[in-house]
Image: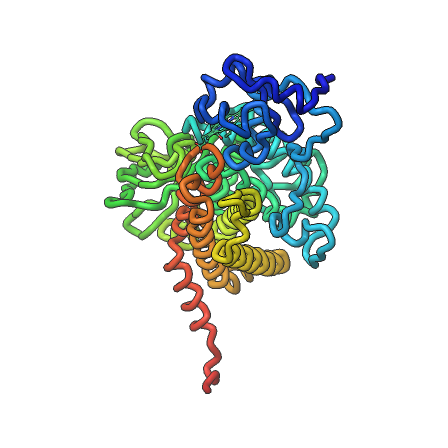
Length: 506
Ligand code: HEM
């Protein structure tokens, strides 16, 4: 039970070695903390702060989470008698009540045709799991640049999170998804969309890619085109998170040339910007053979070396430069027909691009929420930021963009749920390309506007604007990964032109 104190009592403690303040009805004794305060001691002795209710000043400068850190929460010595706490830490898994902070299907009083009760139960469980288990790890790894710990990967694999990230399909059969919350045959692209949007909510973009993204894009060629022996060996290792897989296609200069030597391919060459490459045990690799592009699964071993590439985001993504030096690979590791590598690679792209779009939308929505909250709480010259028309204009555009992105993404997801894989490839490749371009463009514009709203705070890695800072620095990844946005937009128009009826004349 906390001590109950009066404002009169608090006011007496307003000097060096005896300093109390009130934040949201909680009384803190800062006497010993002043010299350790990252904002310096002087601000704490200021008039209106020392011995006073400093709630407004505090929330103008700190995120609420600061008060929850154990080293700071223990500075609380009591509560103001008769006052109640207004600002509470959200319960793990809870939904935000800020308008537009959640998609309409998760907003009270709104309706949506796409989601069932099962999607709702699933969303709640996933958000809770991500907030409790993944968020602390995401923040740690984003900062340290280290690989996600095996302990956390094991927790994901216990709930089949890795398998679910690969979408609906036969790889889910017989599994207990999220402890049985969803049956394998019920799992659809909306469940997967929920996963993608939820995992992007922590302002840790490098970590999201480090979270076994390589498997999501590198495994389908194995189960679609690999031999049964290869599948039996590699798929369980990867889905259980025991082994890492990377998709190694992109090249900066010389590719991966291959010659045949008996029952072995001998691969020599380089790959660049390979996500998860630093940690990968396997590489699903595009190689040049004399019959054309061929995809080969290369296991890390003699002749394979990887070097981390320092990028704008955290090295927890494991982005690597990969060198193959006369690596001997059994011919049985060939994925698909020799010379047919392009179709192996292309068959994967729709799903990958759609996934990136979902992650992008999840991250973008958090930024909209951050800006709405900040514009409401930040007081400048006695008025909230939101009282400025120029700020409201930016907020309006952000809301329009996120709602447009979400709605188009849901329409495309609905098509995916109702189409065969082949239909998706022929009908949706162009639209997914355009969607991805639209979402990443919107994301970049929102990142710019958010930076203007947060000002200098948006340039600081920690503190008030940390999410905006991370998003501004990393939203460009959505515009490049899985296909550069301009190229994808162009693909969309070219596909549309191919399908123009011959008699469509004005
Ligand atoms: C329990 C009380 C407080 C704690 C635990 C605390 C803690 C912190 C921390 C951790 C930071 C680093 C920035 C961040 O991570 O957000 C910070 C910065 C700062 N604090 Fe406090 N603080 C407290 C009260 C106050 C109060 C009452 C003021 C009043 C003016 C204040 C003024 C500042 C300033 C000016 C900065 C620098 C802000 C910036 O770099 O943008 N702090 N504080």
